[in-house]
Length: 612
Image (tube, rainbow, N blue to C red; front, side):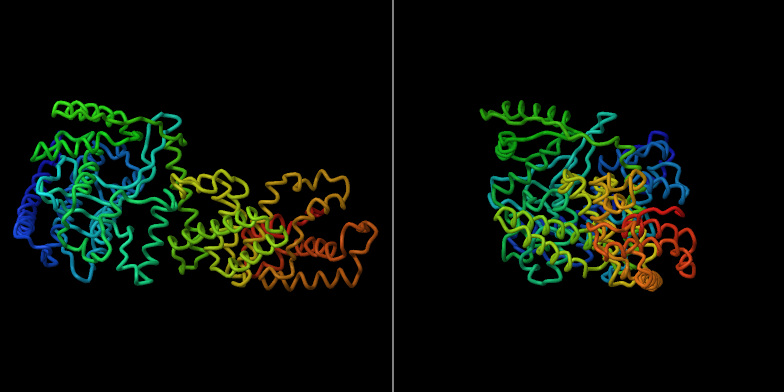
């Protein structure tokens, strides 16, 4: 373990070291068992559940006690903790009486080492109560969402290398961005496909995330749907649907047990790939260990001669390491030419402000989603489907335009698709309409490939809208009309923002000019909003207008407007006057005022009158 210079946790560190030493001895016995099976030529290693659990815990601990986590936790004060979970972490420290981040780290290490993993998996709920939940979830993911493969080179001349940060290395895509205020580069998104645990030059344990396809398992439609949903939200929506692991082909069709304690003989191609990943992440390690110089030189040449783009927060350190490795390669007798180039990270908002805003936005946005879902929604599934719904609309529109489909037919297709979408759960349709607004008002954000949720929530055209009010009043709205209200409101909001002159009633030179400016928003009538009191009031007001022929008065005499248009606008005006009284028994005054503002500004735009 790393030494605590102020000595405040010396006793706790010693206790953790003693516990880890015992676990290390136990794990070594299992590794010797695996090594012996390898030497005996066995293709399958029989490990009881207790030994598998031991290995899983041990591998996670090797990661959790590594340099990355030391850098994260080794601070004198809670205010010095800088990781992106700092708000939640600092609150956890205050709630549990910790004064230094390292205390949380040591306590978590002890909790993991004493954890009993029962077959019923009740340990997953217990561990979240016993340690910092963010790291508890990381342990659960590491154990439950990754398959384990025991890999050995098929060629006797090939070997795996070992770096002192091997257990903190993962394989998968990364995105970086540069803080426009500080100039610092931060990692903003990554996907963990594989993790690595070299045991010896001839033995490496590889953990493979279940997000990667397993054809044999995907025959089960439920497993396939779960995998596709998780993959879309975790990978495709951020990095693109064509994103693949560099080790995707490590699984061969027909090897159902490949990542389930089966020994996998890997050829030189994959040995070089595995070693390359460790070398890519060696910029902060102090040593690289290998057995055979010939094998290491082959791997080194494979890595150094392949084109490499360098970016991110460690770019300078990586270049320094590449120069050292290039020199080493030449000293070992290679005549090959190394290749690499640097490119800048894209700019981003101030990291501190960006993070603080996102945390606040995320909580409020999820609260609205949960209200629409009424406890029945699945965030990941709805987020994925809303994105796919947007992409389907774009593809249909693009295809029909490309092949010269008549605009009448294109509009019909859009309406048919919309009608189908409006049958979906309100929470999902609400997310979709948020994306429609972005698509039409901020087209540059249609496909975001860095941090979709983060960047979308920082865009006010996505994050907030008048339709959010319906989440607070949906109990008084018929379920079959809720999506209609959401759609009308978003559509009119988009129209108003695209044509700001439409919202200038006060500048109109005549009442008819004012009414004309809102002609585009009249396609939604007030008769069926799905709110019983308003439907009843609207029917009554319309009847009064028709019986008194109010719409036929001289001031409304203009051939550009149909009688239905005039009746509709007058109905809206009269219902708005009586709205708060009509809803007084169902809504408190503040909420009634908010709903009134949304309904008569966006959903059913209504011209102002003298008594407004």
